[in-house]
Amino acid sequence: MASSLTTFTDEAKIALDTLSGRATGLFSPSLRLGVTGLSRAGKTVFISAFVHNLIHGGRLPLFEAQKSGRIARAFLEEQPDDAVPRFQYEDHIAALVNDRLWPDSTRAISELRLTIEYESASGWSRMFSSGRLSVDIVDYPGEWLLDLPLLGKSYADFSHEAFDMAVLRVRADLSQEWRALSAAVDPNADADEMTARRLAESFAAYLKACKLDERALSTLPPGRFLMPGDLEGSPALTFAPLPGLSERRARSGSLQAMMERRYEAYKTHVVKPFFREHITRLDRQIVVIDALQALNAGPGAMADLERAVTEILACFRPGRGNFLTDFFLRRIDRILVAATKADHLHHESHDRLQSIVRRLADRAVARANFTGADVDVVALAAVRATREGTVKQGRETLPVIIGTPLKGEKINGETFDGRTETAIFPGDLPEKIDAVFDVSGPDRRQNPGHRQSPGHRQGNEDPAIRFVRFRPPKLERTAEGVTLSLPHIRLDRALQFLIGDHLA
Image 1 (cartoon, rainbow, N blue to C red):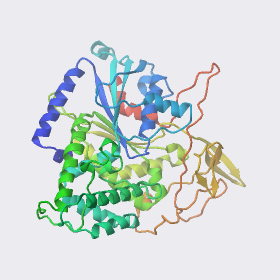
Image 2 (spheres, rainbow, N blue to C red):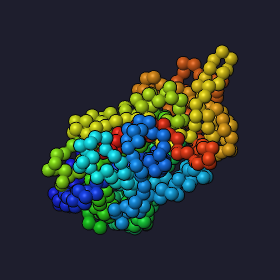
Image 3 (cartoon, rainbow, N blue to C red):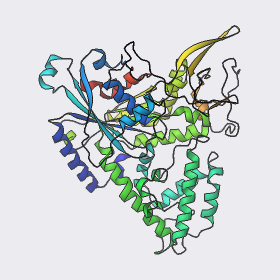
């Protein structure tokens, strides 16, 4: 799909940008790593843990360059793009380590340069390698990425799809007010600013309601309606789909003509520059997914997440080039799809979580593999907030996770204060993963189930799954008082896949 998002002029600009970047890289090797995911999936935590463990020599047994002692040091440098906000690493680490609070979610694009000085594993490589690699980490909201398919859709197409989605069972009640307001307007009537504003505000309110934990829906373009930034209130964000549109050209001066013009302005001034200036410059990509939140909300949310992941992965340019084409066109040759918050499950369920995420990405992974790109799926926790244990209940021994639930989290009617550590039996993910995507079953949103207590296992019924959220861990200290690096689950495996070959 990515090839249909640009014109010949766009491609010429991309080629010039790439050539300029490659020329600089001849003297200062760098790797641009994109980090994306939908809000609260764990992008900020992943980047913070990624950098913290490398700078502080964290425990990374599967990251070969670290394990073999070939990394001399890792440190932060000034980023190359002055027009892009800096990722506030220091503030996020302070929140995690000192306050034991999860950092704020990604609201806009940001960047950070981490430079690694290392010794190559082979003598031959040491002769020609600088022994220095700069990793430019680009953090951006997955909601913005979901806007890219709009580049290939007319305003009528966008409107038809929006109304088709809005009447799905998992969305119908949330979209009712917006649909009623839309039905009361005539697209052919004269353009009116207040009507456009009311429609845009109602449509945005519906999208925001879809994003709440109770529904945890993912496919919600336009993404800037959820994260407007400095565009809030601008005409480019004051539009909405209209019902019953035909492919006929809108009457000049009509409400439909106004909405269509603003939709096209959104694509031209918001979506297309984001794609050209950031997405087409990436070398590697990780997509983080909070599948547990969608599992909490039921099959409708899981089916919606599958749709979102497919669209996100379809927006990249995967593949492998050659010595000549790489000077003019970047391809993403490695993509990692990571299920975050694996620490909310006992390790016995990690393989099932990984299988669920592989199913989410199945179609897009097949496409990327066809282009020659390497794609992997992993269940990880960039910062591990729990530890594992067992609880005996009569003759039964239950595997539990131990941690401090966030203030306000509830289990079996008990509300936690954010200070009390507890042991929780998280339940088991289903062996047959098709069940979690089956939207034809009963609607469980009004009765979302409950968290199983350590002494309670449900029998053969298929309960709604519930996962609570935990506070960041209290970091261990050495006898000398030195704070150890952030604990994790499989962060080292992610590092090895994403940058390990460049440090070989």
